Length: 299
Image (cartoon, rainbow, N blue to C red; front, side, top):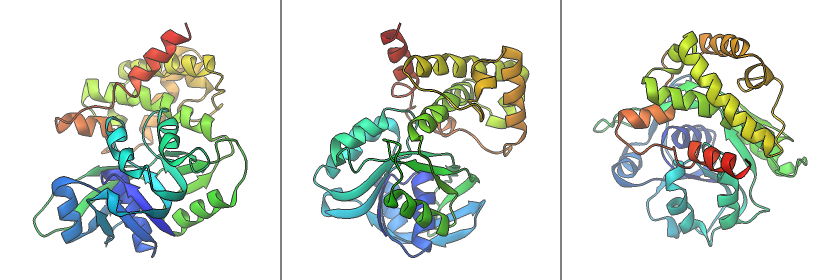
């Protein structure tokens, strides 16, 4: 299968390395120093998996005309710039593993509604500093699932093929007929943990296993869930953003989040915290800002 992966951060590199190792035709769209380093030295995954791989690195995006699958893995504030070169790209399937729930509309506006699938990436990693002559390393810290689905809730062969390709490549992947619910559920939990991660500068397990900071995360999740419900989204009964967190008592929510935190890798830090530590822009306006704006619109 022919993949174009847009974005060479932690997620993009993990996807590219696994799929390339499995023999797929992978092109990784990158820029700047990291692009040159990837082209010269390849990729290394460490942590949950340990291997090196190489793929085609694309610096001039207008040189690619078609691909089977597009995977968008750039930061949300880079979406418009990343999608613009894809306007004339021919593809049968495209999905975004970005944070938030704005992504599908933006992607569909470029590749078309039919090509656009819903998706979430529950995996996590961290880009390590570049070292001269060494592959670009990403520490793979959280091997969560990539969940893909048709946005109309139907079954499809293309989703089955994508899930099969990722599973065969060593990634955790599965299909969902309720992908919009899955995307909102992830967004609800992401909002709480990302906001508190930046405020505390702590690994996720540290602040989720503390009752005081877990309470703040729970309150953010509950407010985000209220906006989702008012938008007509029925959130799942279980999981990080399950009913016990979003509609139970605050004490129940804190207890559930602390239990989740106790099962996490002690080293895992939210991607937004990694950006803060490096002095990079933060995905605030397109995520938390969107919730505030939608909440105001819905009263």
